[in-house]
Length: 291
Image 1 (tube, one colour):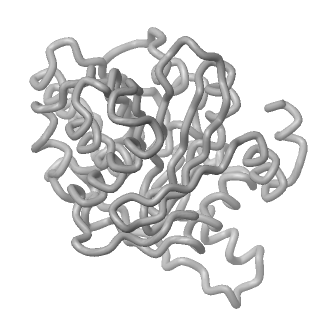
Image 2 (image 1 turned 180 degrees about the vertical axis):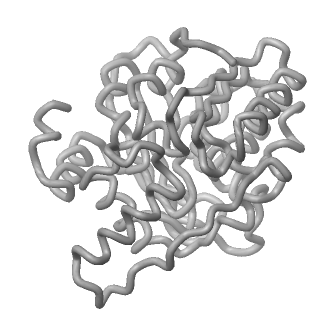
């Protein structure tokens, strides 16, 4: 259970949660993709989760216990990250999306409807995936989405710790960077967040920051057929100030007048970790304050 997971140390907690899933590997566009299927009640389209840059499925570790109670859920390690294989050139948003969309066909065929939620870099990729799959994508939730061009704020970080550093010194660097980039409330930066962040950094091969600063989301936003849901933490370090977040809301509603747009008070970039219950309600279509 989720309560039992909290009582064990971080690496064991990740392993215990992973054991609840089925590992599925498929080849798409010459890249081996590492998916996980998290069982849940039937009756709804499956929910696909895409993590952020320098991440893996563990970006959703705080959300999965709650989501599994409501929905069959799939996570994907994006190419060059986590347990998936590397992407061949070109290293573009379009190529990432082509590979992920092809992987979806391998999993579900070319007619199964689904919903998609993406975080940061994964939100930008997910937007392009939804374009490729048309009306099959029945809801597109974008959490702290990258690809917002001039609205994006590049955060200055400490260099990642060298493997020769003692564990406590490495953890201190990870905590500092998590507070600069990912989590607004220092009290929310627990040992699990530090472990997940450090493990994902150790396994990354693709550096996504250049693509994250592009306008690759904004330029396709008006063409997305799926109902749009925007979710930003009020204190998202990548988003700029509150007016820049509200400008994103205007762009969402210019693309779709009925688009949802939610600003989570006091929450940072990694909103799913800092406010998992709020984010889960929004991903599953629950009501919340809209900006």
